[in-house]
Length: 137
Image 1 (cartoon, rainbow, N blue to C red):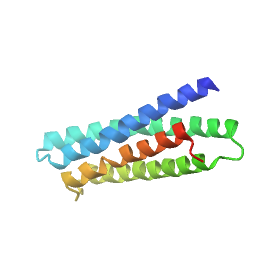
Image 2: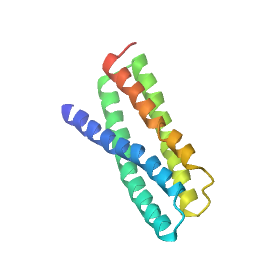
Image 3: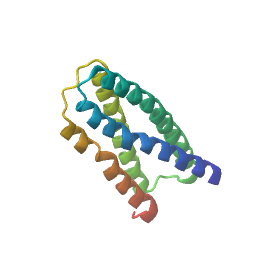
Image 4: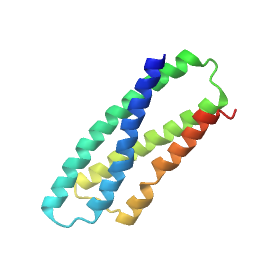
């Protein structure tokens, strides 16, 4: 099981790298006015989204494996952590919505919005780490 745990940590790091960086790219993209810069950001965002999706799928698969192998019934703290994972999935989906808006030239959000949007994964990470390490319930 330690191998699965190591794989899970690897995929979580990969997923979070994208969750942290893609909204930052959106900040810069929202301030871009030239066509070459716009095209460059579109390519970067799409490639990063693909990589972070691979990290997300790997995180979910290995996390489910760990949860089913170790805990029956699930402890309360794990339910709370899974709720945070659901929030991350919603954030990931919203990243896709924003990526499509930029790709089609329909982004209506400001750089300030994306700066605030960029903080969501950090808050979720703090909560998840506290739950996993402290196992409060």
